[in-house]
Length: 133
Image (tube, rainbow, N blue to C red; front, side, top):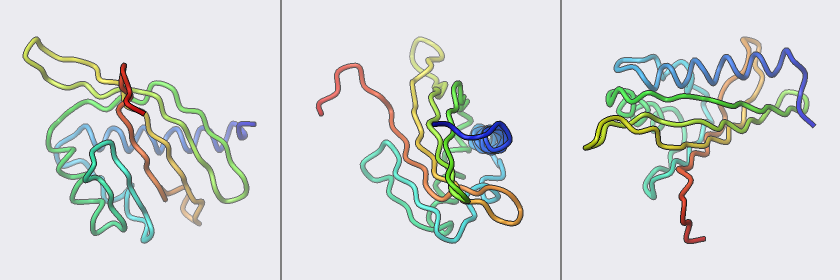
């Protein structure tokens, strides 16, 4: 069962703010990945990061590429002060034949603080047409 409309709107707003920061060179990724215990597992084999001191520099690098991150569908569930979301979207990348929208799915786990919601976990994947597993 999904969560209430207020929580959905708050998490959606945080996801949109995050994707906008990651789409903009110099974007304020530190404000969205600043939780002391934030963890990230990206789609690359080397993308395992723990804490803002590891996550923020990588997010800054991603933002510097100026790729457009688009969260098309965000579904949110919650229980108490924890929420999780499935974000189905894409990243626009430049290729030899122009821009291409590459599917990218994110699983987010969020914790409620006195100031609102914060990212606790980002699990990202680039779905494959012919997955090996």
